[in-house]
Length: 169
Image 1 (cartoon, one colour):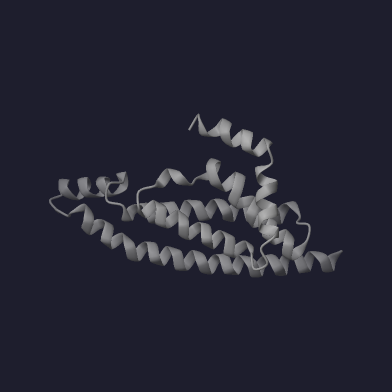
Image 2: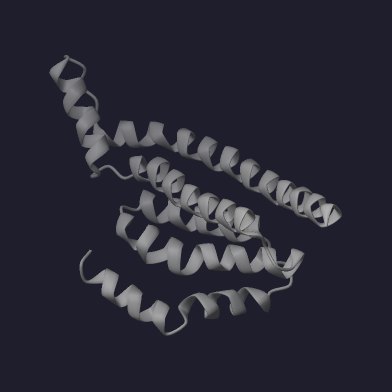
C-alpha cells in the first residue's frame, strides 16, 4: 500500500484525472452508468478469480473511475454542480465495494470462505469451500443485477436533477 500511494500521487500530479476525462469525452455512447457498470463487471470478475488488489479506492476509483464517470456526465449535461459531482463519486466508490464484496466469495481461498467453513466445522456442519463458493455465484449475480438497475436509475435521476436545476436558473 505504501508503494502504491506515491505512484498514484505522481500520476495524478501528471494529469491522470484529466486524461481519464478526455478519454471519455471521445466516446459517444459513454454514460455515467455504462462506465460504472463496466467497472463493476471487471471488478467482480477479477475478485471472483482472487485478484482483489487489482482495483480499489486509491488505485482505481479516485484517480480513474470517478473522473471518467464525471467526464461522461459533463459530456451529456455540461458543467456539474458539486452536489452531483459528489454523488457520482459516491456511486463510483459503491460500485467498487459491492463488486468486491460479492465477487470475492466465489474464490475459494479468500478469508471469508475460510471463516465460514471454520465456523460451520466447529458446529458440526462439514462443507467444502468449493460448495460455499458455488452458492456464492447466485448471490453475486443478484448483486450485479440489482446494482446495474441502480446505476441505470442513477442516469435518470442525474438527468432529472440537472434539468430541474437548469429550470431554476
